[in-house]
Amino acid sequence: MHPIAAASSALSCNHRRTSAKHPNLPSISPRNPARNPYPAAQQQTEAPMRVVILGAGVIGVTSAWYLAQAGHEVTVIDRQQAPALETSFANAGEISPGYASPWAAPGIPQKAVKWLFMHHAPLIIKARPDLAKIEWVARMLTNCTSAAYAINKSRMVRLAEYSRDCLIALRRDTGISYDERMQGTLQLFRTQKQVDAAYKDIKVLKADGVPFEVLDPAQCVAAEPGLATSLHKIAGGLRLPGDETGDCFKFTNTLADMAKAAGVTFRFGVAINRLEKQADRITAVHTSEGRITADAFVVALGAYSPMMVREFGMRLPVYPVKGYSITVPIIDASRAPESTVMDETFKIAITRLGDRIRVGGMAEISGFNNTLHERRRATLQHSVEDLFGGAGDQSRATFWSGLRPMTPDGTPIIGRSTVANLYLNTGHGTLGWTMAAGSGRALADIISGRAPQIETADLAYARYQRGGLRSSRPALAPAAA
Image (tube, rainbow, N blue to C red; front, side, top):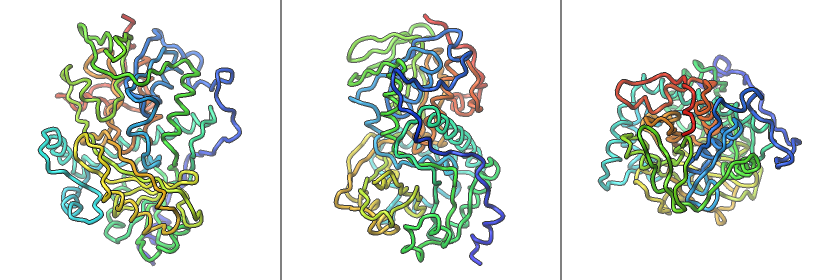
C-alpha cells in the first residue's frame, strides 16, 4: 500500500463546520441593509469614534466594514482610484486556513540555496545591497527552528480559522458573492521527500483541530479530476476540506460598496503624506487634500506601513516580498482545477475562479520593485500546464505582480501600536485574503473596547518590543479629543 494511503484512515479528520453558499440572499442596498454582526447592545461602544483607515486593500476595507457595524464613523483613504488595486488585485485566490504556514521553517535555509539555482525557482533574491532586506532575512532565519515554526503556525492557523468563520457569517448575513467555492485545498506532492516532510504540518493541524485528509495519488485525482493525465507525476497530497477560494478583488470592491451603503466614506486618489502627533496621540493625517482629523487611526498600508510609523519610534519588520500571478481563461473545464491545488515543488497555487484559472506564487526579495519579468510568467505557465495541460488559453493570460507585506515570523501585526490612538493591521504576507475578515473583526473589537473572540496578544506589535508580549485585553478606546 502507498505510504500516504496507509496513514489516511488514521489521520483523516471530519470537517467540523458547514460553509454552504447562500445564493438566494438579497443584495445589499441602503434600503436592504446587511444584518449587523454585533448584537444590538454592542453595536455602539461607550464612545463611538471617528476612525480614519489608511489603505483600501482587502485589509483596510474589511476593517472599515466591521468598524462601521460596531457604530463608528469611518473614513478610508487611499492613493489609488478604487479599492484593491495593489496587493489585493490579483492574488492566488485561495482562502486556506489549514495551509497557513510561516515561510520560516526548519530546513528552509538549505532549501533556499537549492531554490536559487532552479530554472523555475520559487525564491528569487536580488543581490542589490539593502539594509532592510538584510535585517529582515536575518530575523526570518532566527525563526527557522522547530519550536518557532510550531508557535508561528499555530498563531496563523488560529487567526485564519477565525477569519474563515467570520467570512462564512458575512456571506450568510449579506449574500456577498465573489466567485466563491468551498471545495478545499489540495497540497500536491511530487516526491516522497515532500510527502514525508508534510507530517510536521499534520502534527500542528491535529493539535489545532483543523480537518485534513491524507491522500495517495489516485485519491488526489479523485479530488481533482483535472489531474488525471498527471497521475504519474504525483506522490501524494494533503487535502484541507475546510478551505475556500474566491476572487479577492471582487470581494473587496463589493464589500466597499456595502460599506458605503452603511455610511463609510471612501476618499480615493488621495496621497497620504504623514501622521501628525501631539503629546501621546495622533491628531490628524496630512494628505494631498489637506489635514484630516479623527479620534483613532488605522494603518493598513501593507508593505508601506513601516514608513508611516517610523517617526514614532516603531520599527515594523514588514518587508515587500514580490509575488506574481497569471489569470488564464478556461477553454476546457474538464481539465481545469475544481478548487486550489498547491504545487509544493514550485510553491505555486492554481485556483479556479469562475471561468478563469488564477496561478500565483513565487517570492522575489527585491524591495519596492513591481517590474514584470517574463521568466516568472514562464514558471507560472509551466506549473499549470504541467498539471492541468490544455485547461486554459495561455495566449490570453494576463500577467501581474504585487508586493506582499511579510513579517519575519509570518504572523501579521494587528492591534495597538505604541501611540495611544494608532492601530495596526498589516504584515499578512501571502495570507491577507485568507485572514482579512478575522483581522478586520478583531481590530474592530479592540478599537471598540471589547475583548476579541480569539487571543490577539501574540498578534500585536508588542511581540517585537523589548520585554515581549503584553496583554491583548483592551482598555476602553480613547475618548474623542
